[in-house]
Length: 409
Picture 1: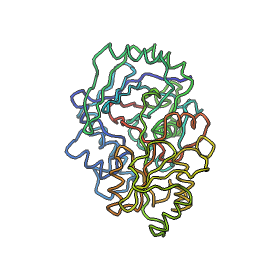
Picture 2: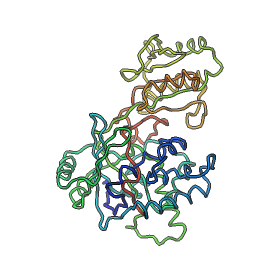
Picture 3: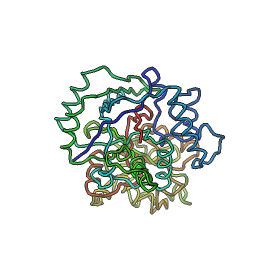
């Protein structure tokens, strides 16, 4: 059973929604966040990345950073202003990117269900990132960015959502600077939607594992510190947007490596040919699963498994990101752990193969790998099997925005 719960959203006025709305905190670094928020006092990046308002070089995890987040949040709430709804509601959030459209339900989900794996996971989290968002939530007493969930689509829910879209005009409807259109409706009559979700056996985290884990840890901290525990308290739930699986769009999560592990270009290519069939003058992106494209010294190469080689068995081992890791990144380039090795970095597919070429051509990487995207079915199968995908296996587009609908705990 999937439990969803309406909530009283803290939100900006419609005429300032576009200024407040900010990309997720973890898709930009400090410099990018500072540039995006420049000249815009209402940008939620002042809250989600408060180090942008501190001197350059400030420790990202210092007490001063979380104090600044709290100060900026209070200022935004008072001066923007942000206003809390008088009664709980669900919301609908539509993302439009070119011809692609997806509509999700904004709600609060049960931390108990997260802890029991009724809300299923496919990614390991890093303790330092959990620490950061846990402290951020506790400083603000709020969850300011949603966890991105999915479920296997159901016709009944599709119908209920379609009817709800036509009842009232949207609260927000704007096009962000990246040309993504964001449209949000309030759903004050939510019983049918809540009941329909109660028939959904599982929800799955698509993106936002650290936010969900941090919400669980924040609740545990409040309980440990003697906070009066009430089973229906807001701290027992976390903010999410839930999309049907058949509407999601996953782009590839490409890889760059800073050096060739002491090999010359010729030595490296010889080693790659021992594990892959290599074609020269390939295109920039693979057309199907089981193919990889590699950019090296201003030339694209196509990689595929040699004749007679079979794809490994297993939900995780058979993924393209896993095969690349096991046959090339580890044995040839010496990348043992992509989570900790500073020689490898990741480039979201939204930036395109041109970004891979730029990084290599400018000497910021020695080689780049363009991958075929992992599918939503892959994600669901891995999650159902209780397994973990390799880091940086999926890049979802379009991205939700922080600061539009805030859940206070």
